[in-house]
Image 1: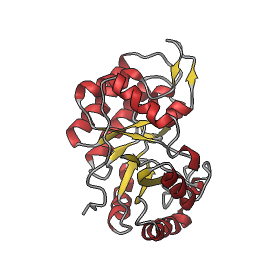
Image 2: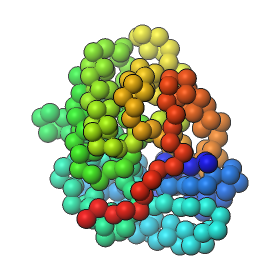
Image 3: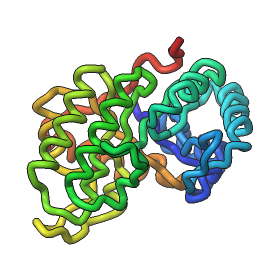
Length: 265
């Protein structure tokens, strides 16, 4: 069965296509389950490259309407990809309970470091920052608000060789996932980004083999996410390629994520 829980739309300001266009492409590709997880707005701060807060209700309403319209053709879920920061705990709960989202996808691009300062993982200063990122991911999954961790190894895009901080950051994230039962996403969009040169050799920015070999040993549940930013990417060649990579590294990904639609509270 083909399923994807990581889908963006033009609302996030760096993707193309409407909700309907993604659904039609998914049906055409034989996808049985499609989860929308556009970049979530925050009520009091614009972190950039995400839907305006004023569009949130339109997004939710559109997916609800399309779920009924295409009920005989595909299973749709409504979610959001969002960062975790402790002060927004009530907001996450509101999204799940009041707005009746089916899931929150943790996409920790921004995080708080050990000093409480806001950081962006894309601009890590050293591999020491990876530890703060990993601790933030661990704190997020402990809340019970997040069903899946998107691109958990996104920290490896930094221009640093793999070192003991990378090992430790990976272990912190994987251990937290095992402890809480949260699913880790193997992100197919990393394959689309291609091979890049790093101090320890050419490789994908992410996914990183060393991270996923650790995940395989831990037996953590894994799902493949397209992270599609245009309809044609819902199920392109990177999806089966991602499955082959995982299987080569000793992981059989989940076909379906169980328990979506169960609200916190």
